[in-house]
Amino acid sequence: MCGPWDDGFDGEAADLEAGIWVRGVDYVSGWRDAKEAAAKLGEVLRLAGVDVAGVRLHAAAGTDGSGVVRFELSAAVAREVAALARAAAARCRKAG
Image (cartoon, rainbow, N blue to C red; front, side, top):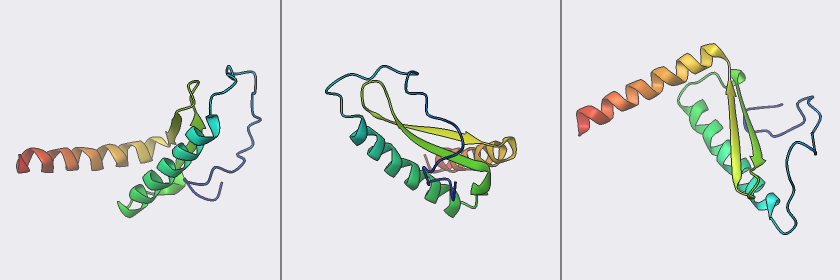
């Protein structure tokens, strides 16, 4: 992968039997929506100063065709994101 928003091949083979494919469900639109959402999340994390080298965002589609973003991160980056979220929550409490 080139970055957290790049949905390139990561070495894992696709398991086409892992889910049920329903005729008529638009999985591609859901995947495109998830890909866009993953790109936005990756950009915000980068702007917040998170080391995106430890982040993996994977776009997929759910069984109903809705977009799904899988968010995988290293333990160090998880602590970093938790600290950012804690600081944002504290600012919201002070403002409210």
